[in-house]
Length: 478
Image (cartoon, rainbow, N blue to C red; front, side, top):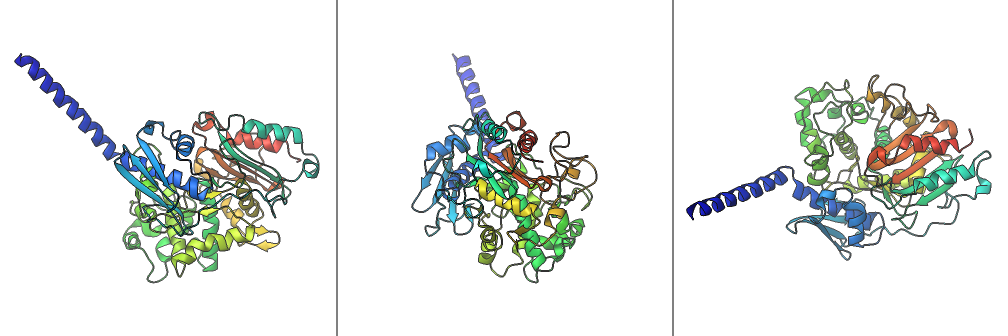
């Protein structure tokens, strides 16, 4: 019987080693902390920033589990509606908290702030957009609009709304000649004033804010980053940059994704992007600590992290954190009549300029319309002239980067444009683009803005933004 005992001991040791190996891999990839943080952040923002009902099971089912099916049953959340925070747990042990904060949205690691006021989605204002929220009647659509075809295109966009395996559209808005023709929300969203997550469309709007503030301060975008900080306001990493080749990185290099830093933009477990968004209290500082991989200004690589460095450059231009946190509202939202938007920060207080802006479809359309009109809004200059041209200037001459401008995509660039092979999209089109199909397309030659938001997990297999944009434009007068 000794041999049986030996076998059992051996099997026990192997099982223990296997368990330790699995735990080690999970810990190395930061899956427990990242998973808990993802759930806490998603549910907190959906509840207190987007204005959706505080129904934890529904929000987990709609927003969290489809995004990371491997976490099903491993991650749970609890909503504290009185103190405005959400706790995420991995296997009930590893905990992360996201709290609603005044003027900063939901912030991982921030203490509970019972005085912060959650956003509540009001019924749409029946006045016509942009004064209100309503689309104009079909009788007032521009002459030549194929109303039946446009309605059919939008209907098709929502055909599988609510299905995480499909396109799962959550919001669409179509503007032409300054009129909102259609605005609609998806199956999981019962109000067109619910704020929807723009993901990387945040980059374009944060880029607008950077352009405006830097212009106000008289700072040229060709200024080296290390020279852009007022005296006494440079973060610790600036001294590191001054000592090596990173001293050559300019503000323009940040805007155009030419910083050349060695950062992984992948979204798989353990990737730099997930680590930054869910585990780093100071995202800009974390990003800036990465070494140079390429000479500044010479190589294009899409890196969300550099957008957060840009946000810290802007932060340093303000006299107080509160002035910085309210700047999006005073400089952009209020002049446009935007009432649903929140630009969230990290724990350090810096805008997450890469990823965390929320707004309704109608408000995303306001951003797009103002940008398309080169910063003008109903006779008022909201942004200094030149932003649209800057945004539409290719970062580099060759490769995919030729289809990218200043925090904005250039889809019809003949070299690197993401829609260069799609007919029906004018050459002057630009778009804000975000994860899972978020799109605000601006088409000056057609005086049109097309907004599409969704929770699309299966990529182009489920939703092709180029085809959708072409289909919408086909229904509008030339």
